[in-house]
Image 1 (tube, rainbow, N blue to C red):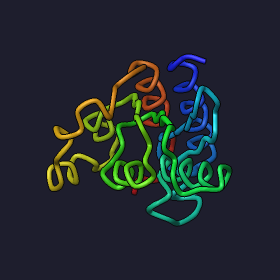
Image 2: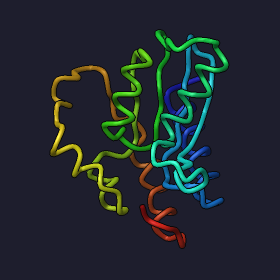
Image 3: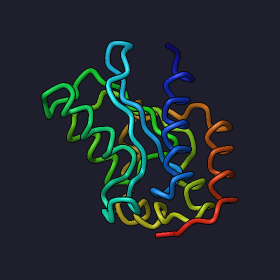
Image 4: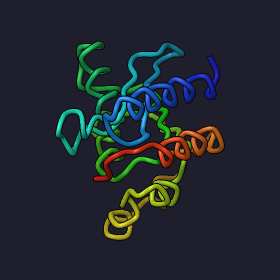
Length: 154
């Protein structure tokens, strides 16, 4: 599979979540050695859990499936550039590489406050090569769909 196919899995996850009122348009796929290990989406509203972002949901599932806390060798695909909580979760899980669609700024355009935390914590400039933007246009279409849905902001 190609990078775009894995991102499409993340987009499909996010779309399922937003259409069911689970949370924001953030879906994630985790891949190891070209094999999909897990996928997840934002479930903040579904679970009443502010930490259940798409990346965290997928990391939890991948760790359970692989029987380990160490996701070395895995790549993560996510529809929105990770917030600091998710970015640190990826680092704690030893994810090798993150591919994201929409940027922190895009997240803000649909009502999320990732930029607030980014201003406080910063440091993305120190992650050279760890995160790569791909398929932004496809993810922006997902964000536009979310923006047009009736939903709760948090």
